[in-house]
Image 1: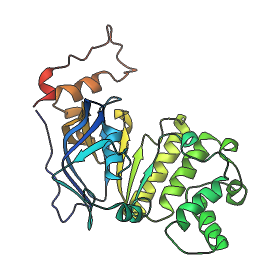
Image 2 (image 1 turned 90 degrees about the vertical axis):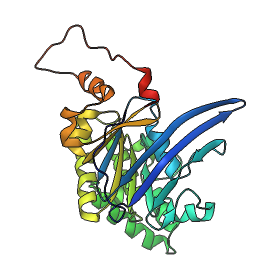
Image 3 (image 1 turned 45 degrees about the vertical axis):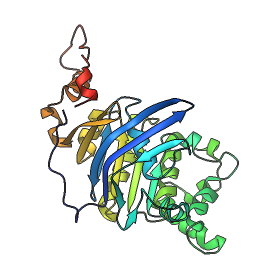
Image 4 (image 1 turned 60 degrees about the vertical axis):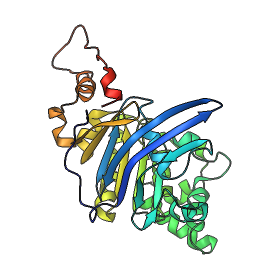
Length: 288
């Protein structure tokens, strides 16, 4: 059973995904990672939450054709603005990926090239879509580093990934993804590797950029408390399916037993619970 709130109209939707399926083939074995996912995204902050392995990141990567060739991706519709993502060619996707849709990866340690200074890596993202000189690209990067609140951008430009902190690294990734002025951003666990104070700073930065630039943001997370305070709407995924779609401010009134189970598992400083509740999973969640 899927619980939902009314979807936006097609005119409001920046992204419209209907009946998305993603399967991975290994010899004779086929693993269905995403099964019949449908949603729309406007110029808003939309969260996708669920346990590890529920299919959250798989959805984001499918939109940008980032899965290996053995992945089987089908849908009745996967429309981004004027681009049919489902049938887009490799050339079309190179024009979309990074320029119109950007993806912020989870941990900058594994996303940045260790042998190139961070400034040149950001400049490469800009120059791959714009013809300009090295100096023009550097000026653009320094301005973007200032936008993401990096202190002393000129110094940081020449640093290597191992010389920057986790918070700086995440800001570097955000700068790299936003320098091309995308219309949509997919943020895959962008704050999971950060401490609480830096996490709040990065979230405030993303929130400000969404508001000032009118971006559509897909925020992938397993932290319900985080998305409750940060996002506008929440999609709850279980075993490759969306089981509930709900306004973030209305999460306490969630109806699906899986969402209730996730909420019940949250720590409560005021009310000690013993024993801790154990989620009773139901086979019907896989088929309803």
